[in-house]
Length: 355
Figure (cartoon, rainbow, N blue to C red):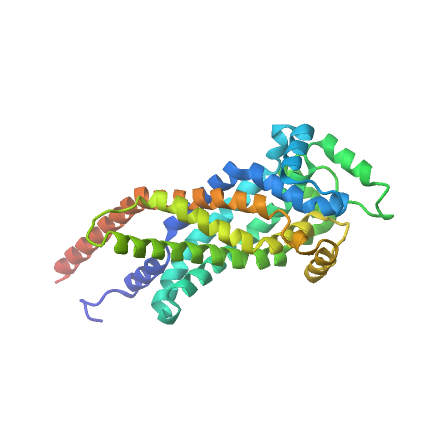
């Protein structure tokens, strides 16, 4: 081998670093947990609104304000934060894989498959990232949503007592979950692994298009913003703070994607909260029964709180990621470049000594 040629190990390391953006996994985890924690009460309202048909039938369902009052009256402030533990845990995993895989996959697609460069690369990267995160996210989502609809022990007992006369023989929801670990163990004991992954395919059916659409909308809005700046300020050095751009464009992208995938979210939620009391036998059966009983309104039930949650959640998430990239990404790059220069200097010195 020619001494001037790079070593195979160096080529392998270079190829690995070319596509794998490890810091994006860290930034994404922080951003995902921050967004979920800050806006969990809105998600609780959305989950309860979408689950009303299972708990009390499709008639006389509460509006957003009525549900807010009901949660406050029965559970107080604590009721809005039921299920925050599994919610944040799932968002850590999803945020890490979402942003980490997005950047890594985008690089790989744009280099290996230039024909897919652009919005297709963004859509595929977002979908792949969310699919990988679903392995951890789905069990956390099942636990979170069941804890959200239960509220306090007293409230859950009153709901079960109220519905006992309407239930079929042998019909039973599930016991009360005081905490995340107890809920996970209880679901595992009653339904096994299948219970923790209830609605897995319906979750993917919702999240894969949502994740792909959100990152596609975000990148498209960024391109549109850059185009607008060039048209309006062609000879100016004016730049927009990346964190503020992430806040605005991330919110818009999340809102658009959330509304378009609301019917998929309704189906997923009802499949996951029904427990052993099988009201819907499959994904298609849920679509048919919801449409038959509630029509288009039922398919888009909870769309307002869903959008209300995703606009600020996506805005905060993208703002956090852009902030971390701007303030820490460059420092990490500088350190990486320093290490590469040091490595080159050491290899050069070794080569001279060998000569």
